[in-house]
Image (cartoon, rainbow over all chains, first blue to last red; front, side, top):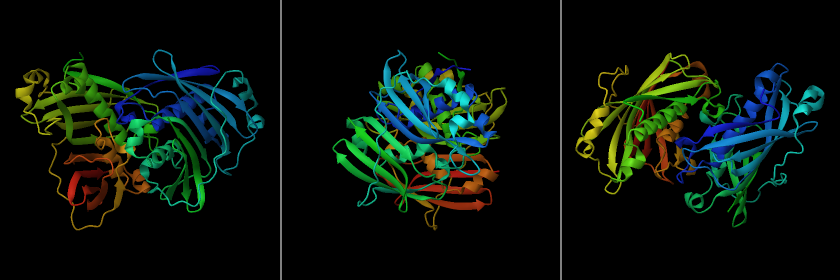
Length: 245
Length: 245
């Protein structure tokens, strides 16, 4: 039992850093999902608990806004809490702090509870009315709500990849974090030297599986903003927006 | 100061696991390099210390033999020590243990000390005679010595990739561990369901950089043994041997 809100420490190892000696965006997002899992686990609604009901949490959306990225060998604390429970989605928030407690960024995630046999969403309040006890609607998460991300059309793909072993997660689908790693890989190395990813949004629309051939379509909205659509044929598997600063 | 031999704990997070809920080979190899860095750092011959002499440690070879892979949410201890110091190479060994102290595997790595301006190897005993004080030649590391890995010729490439942002390490070269991730990705998912990687050997021959287009050439020696040559054009960047069981 860790209570309504809990913080989990993560030590920034070299393999979570890029050439700037800071943790990568997808490294931080990995910590976020890990903190979410641990908090749910400690409070009786983790993957293992809900599997008994043939239900699994599926990440639907993620928004993250970072003021700065933590450096190699430092420790971050990821605080997480449930902001709200709607009929088919829960909203979980995160605050990322450095060792001294200074805020580095915030994130908000949206989760569906999918029946693992029918793959249909579960009516969450009907299934687990007790989750209402965990919500903290009053706790501030100062990151703007997720805005709709349009598809990217009428451009040539910037990059393509096949879904391989290291892309696959415990549920045998494409790992949510690996999509993000591939997405940031469409940018040139110089971009990461000169700027940081200030905000990143992603919506997951379909589940990639081993062997899928995915293509990334990128449209630059302005000098510092791009949309990246990851598609399997005509179908968007996930759509993302990236804002640099 | 951690002494001649030291052990470092690593908690197995979900993002280090594959679909079998065990840590991946390249996840364990990441821990190994991290343990090596920390041990060197604590004893005055880490990256930061030797940079003053314009010298950097460069991984030349790695051999790892695993009896079993640790599961999600467990903790492993990686013990490391220097087995020997030769003129141009040091040999560093590792023992990987589970939470109860049972041995999961062993590894041996070979490192050169490269002058970062001339890129030439440094005569290690002449440069740092004090390293002799750290060697533990008597400590057992029961993994057979590294055997020469021949090039793979006269086959079509199994896979290719461009070196992108997430492949690049702090030194702006291709990350040693990322080569391993791409190498294991030549295998089908079913292989990882039915077998484990019992032994893996890799020799690094050249430094990949951003934008390199690499191709993987695989030759099956037997049902459970393959050679995989990662090439940039005609040049081998690294060669590896993988043994399944």
